[in-house]
Length: 344
Image (cartoon, helix red, strand yellow):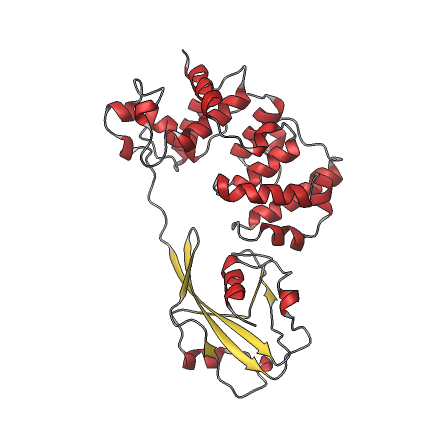
């Protein structure tokens, strides 16, 4: 049996019952693919349902505010995905009349839609034989075919894409792409793959040469940057506080946080007092440290060591917000967890 037929046969026998697999609606497929970028299926599934309930069509998503979209996205991370989702929904709704592009070459031009997502939508919705290659696919192909080229090198990206394109079923590209991804997720796992029940074990180079743990090969990651955040949590006698929106192209763009003092190293009280904006302080009380041990929030290329400092004030400027107002704002998980823990 050929590779594609063998793979699709395995898939039809073993596939998980996932909500986006019962539709070919490009809006729902696009939504699921954006949510599942850099997100596990079990984590992403509730967000998929939440977004479909809040925004059942591309028009309803396009007409929402960016803050509404970011608030619903809260907790998924990589917030540029949510901003791109909103931008592209507006483009499709207002510029294309609600009609999604119907080919890979046009889909890949959409903001936030890369090679993988465009290929997935094109194959699932329009039966276009375009290979969708993600981390699961890299792992499966590297092991079965014994490929040593690093998956995160330009040469590797091209090599794996060409191989997947050669293998894809021309008759059933939708099931082929989903099968290959599912196979990597459920059978050819990163650790403890199910080799004894694998339909490709007789031809798998990694299995037969005892190289399962060696493949796929990846170039070493960049050094992780360490940052020190000090959040100033102002609390007035009315129970109000100050929140600020992050601007620029750094992390958490568009989300809200408490006034921030970033320091080169872990800050003590003496250092911090010098940094506190005097305009907000209307009492002589010193800042109180909420957490002695910094909370470490790990992102892909940086680790953020965070302290929360409580500043009790008689009153705050007019822009101060109540807790009810704060709870409506989109915030990073780091801030959300603090708000849930701290008793305002």
